Length: 374
Ligand code: ACO
Image (cartoon, rainbow, N blue to C red):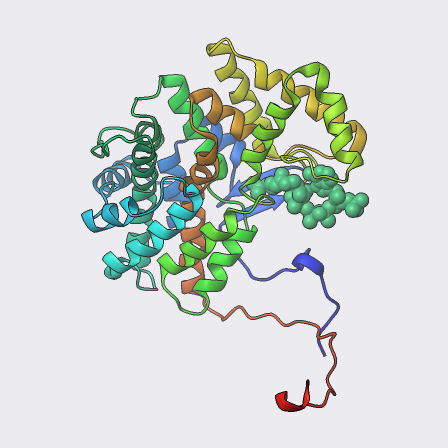
């Protein structure tokens, strides 16, 4: 007999993993044994990627090797660029990303085979996502694609591909930290989707296609774009109280707040809040920081909810000039590392993920032939 239904699989332990640990009571996030606060303070996205994929920190030579590999894998096939050109410029960039990963599997089938060799596909996808997003961004601005650039960190290349400019040192570090913070988060909805797909022994690119589709939703990665819409709606600090209370009275969710696992503030939000302020100070634009500070006070007072990562990521990206509908794709450009690390772990210890449901419909209806149904 099936057990009690846990709606949304809340608190259900689905599998064992060595990749990521969240202590929701203490507000701690651990990647492969290392506290996110230490990683955000001292490491780089490439180093964290190595850590998540290989399970340990790289030596300097190993890290240099990974950097080189990612740089070398930035170009995408001509055939994929042509596919992207066929998409309407009005397309949602998450749809473009999902379509591009799916199409890339057709052009590079050798990278997608399930098993340990999928590490090559993981690095390929990680390197290619900024280029794919950049090509789409250029196209909708009616500009020719940029040549992929070596000699830039992954974070700096992402900014270059999207904005056709190299970031300042502060911007490069801010985006690097944002990528580190987004790289993995245990069995969140998109990672679970990737693992479910991989557990059927389907290929890596199919798993990542599933994950991108899952991240797109506003209750998951899409929340960062909605936060910025809310800030726009609020407009000024003196309107925070009225707008937030109005939303709560209408039982609307306040985006960027609450979390299934964290019962205190999301540690990633704490770190990113600092970066949003630092960037704001450098650009003499503290509008977002001031609005967010007040929103946090009001939401906490009214609902007892704490901010999550998505509350601050939009401010960081907006201050750099990244278009709003690319916020969730930027999230994907980081999370692809976590997704692929989880898929590799799944291949390594594979068991088909197939839960069961509690059937609450009838079981004894009599079939009436169509002709007798009027
Ligand atoms: N605004 C208003 N109320 C909220 C919010 C919110 N952001 N989050 C939770 N609540 C309330 C719910 O209405 C519910 O209240 P009720 O019991 O009176 O009905 C209660 O808190 C519990 O909510 P659930 O939806 O059961 O909690 P769940 O664990 O399913 O939700 C979620 C987690 C989906 C993240 C939720 O907090 C939410 O919708 N937040 C806004 C979207 C968001 O910021 N998503 C980003 C998540 S982090 C990430 O993906 C990187």
